[in-house]
Length: 158
Image (cartoon, rainbow, N blue to C red; front, side):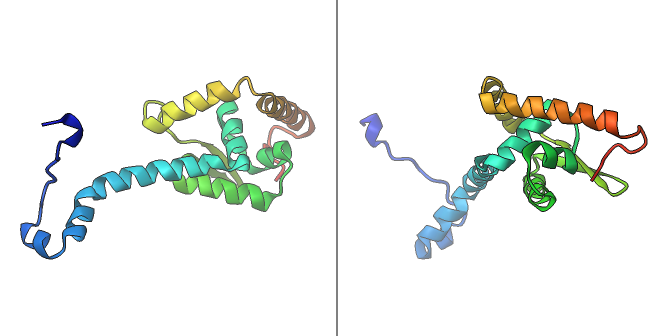
């Protein structure tokens, strides 16, 4: 038989349903694959937004950042920063930690996972990008100014 015309036998878990509802059984058999692909689609959708991509880049540069740090560096409002951070949190890309009234965020992806490897590739790609370098410089300037202006007790200015 020609390899291009090989017929694949699909597993039938419910033979009595296969006769009456063949499309339903096909969907049930493929559910595992559909779920995996949906997770990947959600991951890439999370990175498809420019603001979220910039936030991920900032979190790659610094272990942990407060919402006010992200606001100052990106020049966005607190509600917009929080909305994008919550989106990333719901995807499982970041974790949050409350410190009094301040919320701190950090990356939550295991470096050995598939998403971790993709983020590593993204970091290598963005490292030479001029806008990413500009964000890196702005972040360092802001953190330096923040340390100079505020006492050791007040770690955030939100």
